[in-house]
Structures are given as structure tokens and as C-alpha cells.
Image (cartoon, rainbow, N blue to C red; front, side, top):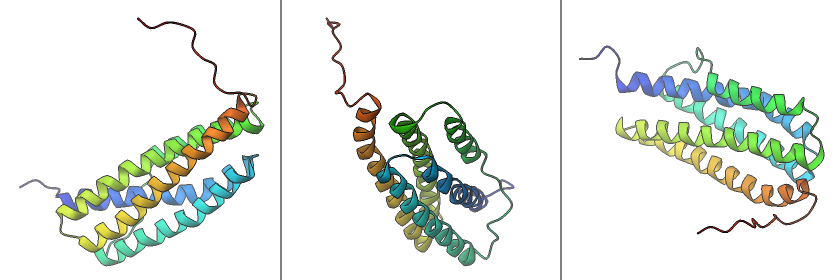
Length: 174
């Protein structure tokens, strides 16, 4: 019998998510402050409220498990946030900075989508249907946020390109 069980891996994944979400609670206000688009600012502020709810759901799961959520630092999220922070220190401004912020935010969302999908799968296999439902709720919110960012990026990317439509590629493909 292995020394570690799937439940241990599940708890480890939840701790990683808890750390990731708490890092985001600190990063999202900075992203909102850096954004020039009012819609993007509002989107980051709305996602901050959602993220605080994600932390509460994870705390609820840890309460059901009678485990502490502390003790792990999510290095993946730490790196994603550091990359996004570097962007704000560059000479980009206006719609160009906003386009970069959306890219950074979508990398974060995709990371979270993968992590919540994994945790939900573990919860289902472990027979933790209440946990799985809570994780599914958060996963759906992460997917919806990513979709909102994609929609917003269309408008902002056009602005970043000087308001013009994409240039047509004049090369012929045989």
C-alpha cells in the first residue's frame, strides 16, 4: 500500500488552491488600479468579490474535512502574478497595457480552471459529492470569467491596434 493516498493528494491540491486564491485577493486590486478601461477595472473588482467567495467555499470544504487550509504556497500562481506585475512596470499604457492585463488574467483563469477541474475529479472519485458541488460552482465561475475576458479583449485589442481591424495576411497559402 502506498504511503500517500488520493485523499492526501486531494487535500494538497485544495491547499494549493487556497493559497492561489488568497494571492489573487491581494493581486486583483492592483490589476484593477493599473487598468485604464472602466469595463476592465469593473471586471477585476467583480472577480475580486468572486475570489473572496472561492476562498470561503474552500474554507467550507476544509471545515468538512476537519483540515487546515494553511501550510502550502502555490508557486504556480505566485509566478503568474509576478509576470502580470512585471507588465505594469513596462512602458505600456492605455489599451496596450489593458490588453496585456487581460492576457495575464486569462493565464490565471486557465490555471485555476485546470486546478479546480482536477480537485473536482478527485472529490468525485473520493465520494465527496458536497465538495464536488462546491468545486463545480467555482469552476463554472472561473470559466465564465475567462469568457468575459475573451469578449472584452476583442474591443480592447482593437483599441490597442489603433482602433483598426486586423490587417489581412497578403501571403497566399497553397
